[in-house]
Amino acid sequence: MGEFLTAQGRVELTMFLLLMMIRDEDYEWLFDEMSKRTFGQKIEFFKCYTSDDEQFLPENFIIRDQVYQNLDALLPQRNAIIHGETYEDQFRGRPRQPYRVGVIKKNIQYLEDYTMDKHGPNVFTVKQVRDATALAVRTWKMINKVRGVTRSPWWD
Image (cartoon, rainbow, N blue to C red; front, top):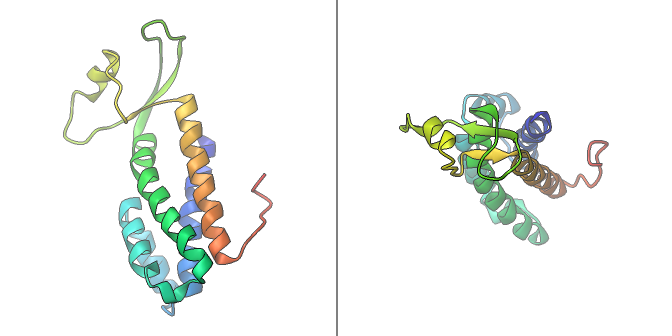
């Protein structure tokens, strides 16, 4: 899970760095705006402030739009992983393994559903956490590509 948290933090920081690069707003104002928002609100703010095609080279339009899709896919995964608890269990012929179980708003039964093997999008195996981490890393790299950063010591 530490790798996921690191990748997620890099996504959020790089979103901010891209905003600093393409917007004329005061950096302190941008930092304050991003800092006070939830991740979902940061995504909306980011989309709003990066939606003008004039800010990007034509070859980056597709990358930007893919970043938007990745961020939308990452949001529910991130929320479930961050706002969850870790359990180690065995279900129906599967090996005993860790699960990350995210809280579901307005559903006090989410842990009972989990224990009854009713696993929804809020339940993650180790592989699923790794997949979410990989999505965050791809998104981070894509934002960096738009920024003109093609190499980083953390990419390997």
